[in-house]
Image 1 (cartoon, helix red, strand yellow):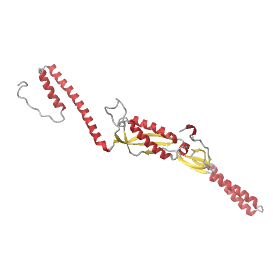
Image 2 (image 1 turned 135 degrees about the horizontal axis):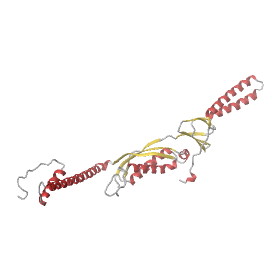
Image 3 (image 1 turned 90 degrees about the vertical axis):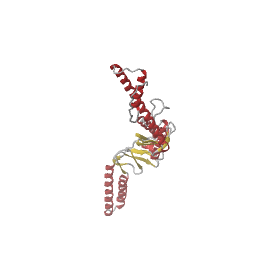
Length: 298
């Protein structure tokens, strides 16, 4: 969007509404008093004109009153022309012919629906996010987009789809070492999502306060396959640690036997002992000992 043609918010200074209300009540009372004097005086036309003028002044004072709550604004227009935005609080007064549209400046939550999109690998995943936002520029929100709330919802879904396509769901051999993933890099992903949302919301004068993923999972059609893959990777990782620990224990045992001179083992007996120890240490089931009454060579 061309910044030169973008409508920007301009401040509007409204008058104190309490003073205007008091003045309006006094003018109406004065109008009634003039009408009463008109009935008692021979010059009734002058009193009538005075009553009408004073009464119109009172109605003008009362007709321009409006009230704003904290974190609420009023966009004022006159015959379609933007006059300004009033961010004052309490009872305020402005020209009665100004059209006043109230607009909340409070923080709002948008819970994106769960979307099915493809991640960087092309795997279908389900993803959703919660976005906290608020209106920063009232003129942009009202005049630059047709419906800024619907604009926020559509752009948030578009940003979420684009985000999912930039990252893989989980780590894998096809990714570079240390590459960010949706599951492991939540903080980085959240910062990226917030930055993209802010860029998309800029045209509507909306500020992103926070954005976090609320749901992340593989799609139902591949969830079971990916679960088995994760289980296999976990088993392989656990087995690798078990084997590494078993090798260290066998090495310590052989070194201790040799240093203390408990028994002298040749290479073949060492190989047999290492085999037996590794079977005992690496097996995931309880092992049954076999008593050998002979020798290794007979």
